[in-house]
Length: 435
Image 1 (cartoon, rainbow, N blue to C red):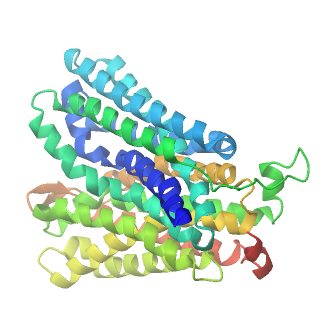
Image 2: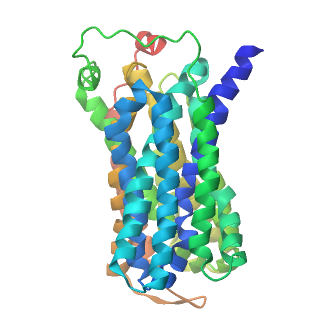
Image 3: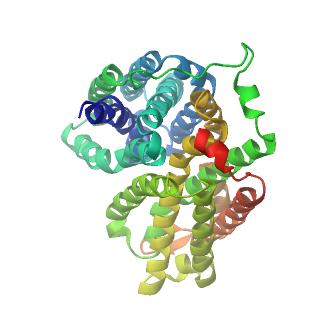
């Protein structure tokens, strides 16, 4: 009974506290327009704060993965402080921008606070509980990491309606007041997670064969092409996911469901979280976890091609069958996007063992950093430079441009599938048993 309590108290619960806090970074679209209006800048200028947050999430994970490997208590404390400090700083610079409209200082301050400082908290907070969970749930590593990472995905569904209500109820200046309140709430949640997070008693880190055996030596245990394949297919999956998810709201409006956009966004967030848990738990039962990525890419290609062939976005308004196809695509992409995240640490542990897993996982999350800069921007570029904007259901939209985004993502998904099939080597039975 004690082991069961420890497994959940020392592993799962602190992981959820950390990930349900930092996962609210995906609530950005809820308040980005309010920030832009309050400080006197365009929404496009403000949007870079989110891109910087994702970029520094990946880069801090890459550079601080070694710290997480050595001391999860120090890394989880750093995550708690920097995430809360970043949110509070964002609130301060929004307040400053409201009192000094169009001040460059307020915009740069938001970039630094929400992007850089909070980004450090995102990266260290994301990594800190992952290895611990895999140690506690050694026989079901996918289920364990999926549970935590699902918390990251579900955070948007949980926090979005709360934030929307706060923006209204707090009145004038509610957007900066909200950041102050959330900074305090999330600090408490993350700090409690930091206090109770612990590795299993008796766990001893594997002895290195030499002092020089670090990350590079670990990666060289297998052909480097295998790791490159993992990194690239992870990057492509995030890029395609962000490209489609970033246009999700307008796609929904094009098919005549503007009134249900909020509900659809919540459902897609649940698919995102469900994909993180479901795909990773499924992978525990497979001989090779890479099979999950093949399934994700095949499903994504299939549903994207269906929408492309039927021109579902342009012709979906009023057509129930086409609406179902488009919604199925949105939900499948969200599920695959989430599943891609949750399976990375376990796939890496299967290939390279648990010795340097936090550091290797951190380096791999650099793919998230670059995809955070390329996914949204790629989709925006395609929409703004192809097709034409027309009035659709009372909004200015570009159905052809959204279809063109799908053409590009289909090609990229096909490339990722080829990488998964031909570049990432299958696990040998012996190596998997020793992982």
